[in-house]
Amino acid sequence: MRLAKNQDLKVGDKLQKARIANGYTQEQVAEIIGCSSRYVGQLETDTTSGSISIILNLCKLYHISPNDLYGEYVDIEIDPNNITFSGYINLNSEYKSIVDNTINYLNKLQNK
Image (cartoon, helix red, strand yellow):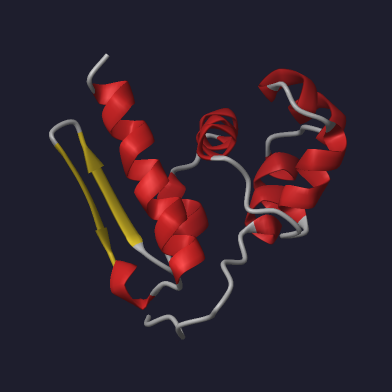
């Protein structure tokens, strides 16, 4: 699937479904990952895209991968020696920045 240049990432519904499937309330998730329940709600309504660390913590908590959230936008392949993203070229500058920050964050984790 190709993204239109200014198409927004819509992952909130996926986050909400994953939270419910794992039996959590927004309040419980907020407490576990260290944010407010309002922020969890904003993530689930796509009001905010969330920080990389929060999104990765949610993926871990919900037992999903970043591909489960972003797979229709970019294909994220993570192996210990290589992280690749395809579809990047079609993202708008805001979402390219999110991908760039994700790569930097994952590289920092890998180099620890």
